[in-house]
Length: 319
Image (tube, rainbow, N blue to C red; front, side, top):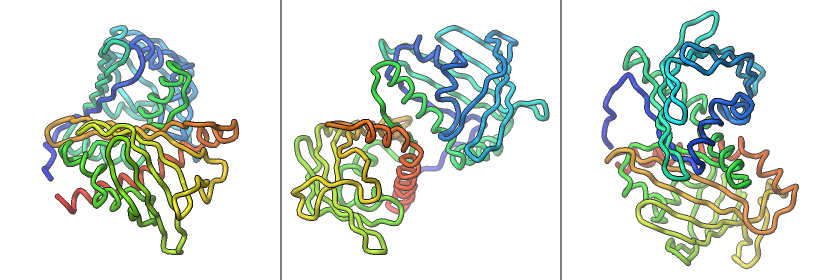
């Protein structure tokens, strides 16, 4: 593993499946921002917004624990469809915590969003990085992806991203070598073993996950795409121990029977890889099952976060 270069800036990149005009409006229209702004579980109330240089966005973030967080954002640059520069974290009792620069790039129907958060010192940046991770702050940009997909295609999806300090080729192996995959994918508290594994396009796997109480969950995946080192697409479902019948989640009977999982790997540098995981319901689904999926995004975030934490630790061990 390589050591990160210290900097007083935190950087984040996302590519969204929506035109730049749609992404821009999602940012600047308070009614639209209210549908995604903030970590999972948070809501916002806008009191006033004046989108211009020197203007302010006065809003309150409402945490899932009932705590309110007042914010007064000041805009320093507003270049329509291209660029926003503003401060973050200020309110009547404290100055801004950092300066944010967001650059929107039109990719012909898609939009690249590059964000830079500039802090006073390297130490402040590192503390903020840790706080954002602990508070699940980056789920804000996953929620934006979900909102934009709903606006653009009417699809309900779940998205989660994580950047790892490892080359993209190594990360691809983590997803395609069963000896690696089984070490970290299972939910926290479960161990995973493959009964049969053939991770390539038009092939499948069959596996078992078991916890310390002896609860066993069997599942299978069918791979539609395996394109080294950037992308995997597969369906997954629970099944019986003989891999003959589709079953339901043992602890969530209204969970949809089949999910489509898309894994996109992006090299952010020679030694950094961003993993984007997208879940979508496929097959016949009832309204109750779709509601379970939509309302379960916080739980999905927790589940995937546990697995990705395990992956992070595993990468440190294998080097």
